[in-house]
Image 1 (cartoon, rainbow, N blue to C red):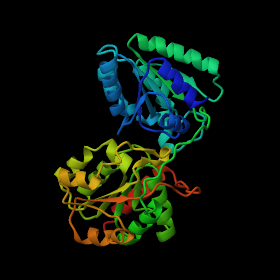
Image 2 (image 1 turned 180 degrees about the vertical axis):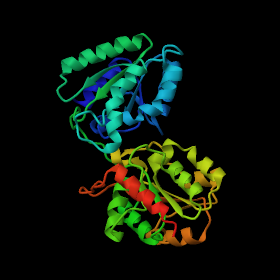
Image 3 (image 1 turned 60 degrees about the vertical axis):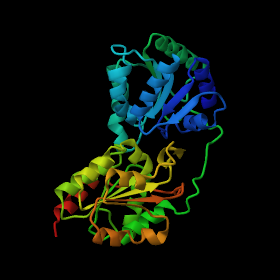
Image 4 (image 1 turned 90 degrees about the vertical axis):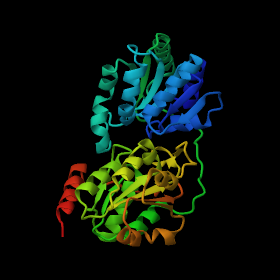
Length: 376
């Protein structure tokens, strides 16, 4: 199926706004959205609930339903505005969802997607959202039928979801861009690890940051037991790190976050600042993109996380723009009180042979907790 054909059909249905958070299953669709030559407005929002909000506002202004795209893991973020505002028992706001199905039962996937994959269809049933599932075998004629059903549902002030299996969309014109930042993320992460004391507790965000930290730590130290990899739950690493920091004031806690993840739940920053944990150090690796799911720009490229953290009340907030500055992180963690936020701009790109953790998520949790129990 060609994303360009689907987007043209959506525009023909009267949809003039598309908003969402990118997904690897929808990579070709997201590329198509970025290169589409039609007249639809496109918003990459901080989280999926915000995309639903934008869709509601667009409908209120124009009377036209909008399209919201996401990975199925983002359904949770969308539930509140969908159930409390858009549902027919409240305002009855029509909108079309396009949802990438990670963790589809019977298809091998990463552990963080397995349970979400099992309950994806059930969630839409619970939310009273009609849906159809499409895959690489879906013909143009079958897709036309799906869209007719969707259009009829939208005309009644209701929502409709198209659940997309892996490999559904064909490769067309790829979307690519560069942010101009010279530092390479994996090299920066290796520098951070070598700079920090070995007993530093690290909480890392979902995506390639955790995968690169895993490989770098194993290469440098032969292990990674001091790293909690937040493999799912995008945007929650900083609050997990805060929870550890408050219970273990004897440890230095470093949260290595991504720009897309930090944007997703930005309210964590002023809350962390208000708690003022002296042992908390927040590093935001900023490549201005959702790289792990296709490198689509975040839509907030102008955001200064150091500036936001300073305004929120962090004790210190700086942008580190050179390897020499990155190499001083360990000294800062040893000598300065938190909360501190350090923003590090990096380029896009990762090794093609970048691996994934060999242990299960449960095993990594147990090794991390055993490391924390050692108070010496």
